[in-house]
Image 1 (cartoon, rainbow, N blue to C red):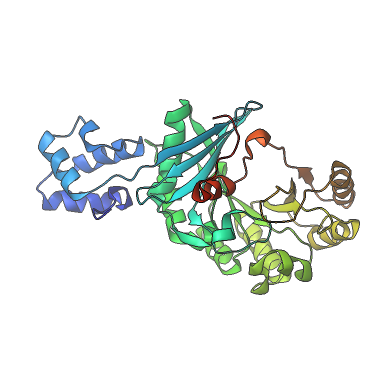
Image 2 (image 1 turned 30 degrees about the vertical axis):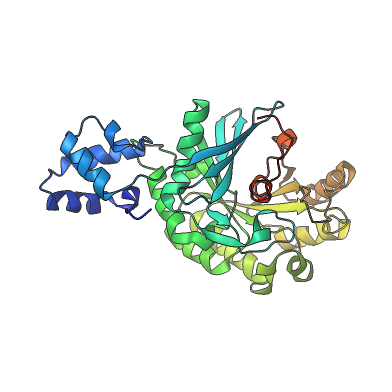
Length: 350
């Protein structure tokens, strides 16, 4: 990985390098088009002179990911990938089929340092950030593997996207490139555990993405037990940032709430959530918690989910229970990578 990543260059930076090589500026656009269409081998850029292809290969690399494992659901065609990066690190991604098209949940970091108590990704901590190119490579690998086009993106895989802020913003710019993957910001969701300072930074970008907040508790005492980030920023500070974000962008906030049996799924929690969020532009996404090896948590019962939802809706909030996809392949992120690291194998059809 000693050669620099050519995809990390802006078109202006690439044009400047080509000028130093006495190569016409229009070649930069040709190169960019190949990169935006997922080409990872300079030799395949067949509208470039052979000498230029050789020179590019000598000076740059094009990051790609390798499919290390693939699990396909026999129920709904959800596909879970374990991708190997160039340095041997691994990340997970999930491809989901909806009526409107294919959506992909991407990782933004190798591991995570947020340490949420119900999450498998953060058990081993953070190894490193992903580059924008590595985020894009996850899409390209899945599209090539399934011969489909991904039409929407969710940054809700491994890692905390706002903890890798600059590369995530660079990735957004790459996404919108007309000749490439070309996914507009209204088809992008970013999920954060609540890095309040970065929410204000993101607000200034005025992007038309959907901001999803991993709330998971209606008060500071309970949230601190579940999420270490709550020791730095209170629920009040987080909700104030969310209101400012909505006021600036006009975009509705989506609050994620993992329903954990006997922990945060009581009627009292539901009523407190109503008091916190009533009158705000938001949607509550109730998520039946996933079992995580080594953790005692269990998902709430169907009866508890119904009761909790009823309290929220009767209180004037828009609340739904997230549809479970890929249940037979354990499609939530984090656990497939841990099994790979431990040398164990999950018993799913591949």
